[in-house]
Length: 78
Image (cartoon, rainbow, N blue to C red):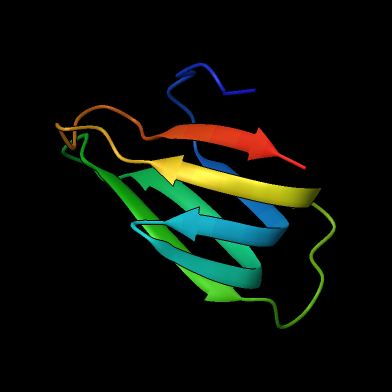
């Protein structure tokens, strides 16, 4: 299953995040666009719970777009 490009900021805590060939266990994914419309992907280890962050119990794969003006695609796998 993949997400459509809704154009909005994304924050997901997942059991695993796969990005550019690296698997990050129990990590926070943050996708956001800067003032110029370029998308950025930040992945950080889980440190503390935040109520507004969505949880996914499987693997989220981040598929970057060829152009940074297009939001990366997210694929959700169990």
